Length: 177
Picture 1: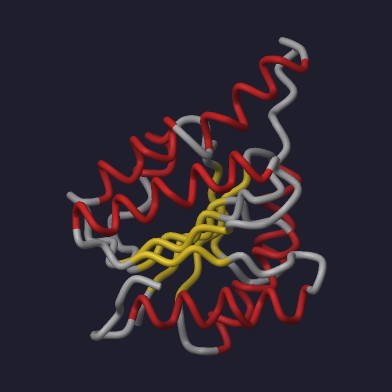
Picture 2: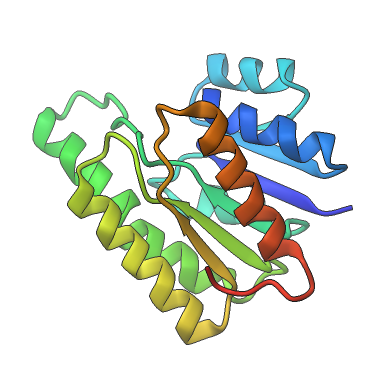
C-alpha cells in the first residue's frame, strides 16, 4: 500500500486525502495546529503536527512515504508576533530556502515523488520560484516531480488534477510532469 504525506492538509488537502484513501492509499496529513489535526483525523487521515517552515519536522515523517504533496499555495504565515515583514519572509522561505532544503534531503529517503501546488493566494512570483526549485530538484536528483497549477477555487477540478499527479508519480513509470 502506498502512503502519501500531505503537507498543509487543510480543506483541500483533506479532499485530496479522501481521494487517495478511496484508492487504497494510506494518507498522513500535517497541520501546525491542534484544531487542524482534529479536522484531519475526522476525515480518516493520519494526523501529525509539522511546520513547513521547519523542514526537519516534515522529514521525520517520510520514512514510509511514497509521495510528498506540498499544499502551500494558499499558506498563511504563522502568527508569531513579529509583524507583516516576518510573515512575508516565512512565505518566501516555505516556497524558497526551506523547500529547497527539504528537497535536498528527500533524495536520501524512500520518497519516490513530490507534488507542488503552484497556484493559490501566495504571490505568484513565490509560487513560480517554488515550482522552479521543484523542477530543478527533479532534474538534478531524478526525483519524479509535478507542479500542479489548478485553480484552488474550483475544488473538484483541483482535486482531480492533484490526485492524477500524485498517482502518476507513484506509478512504476512515474515521470516528471
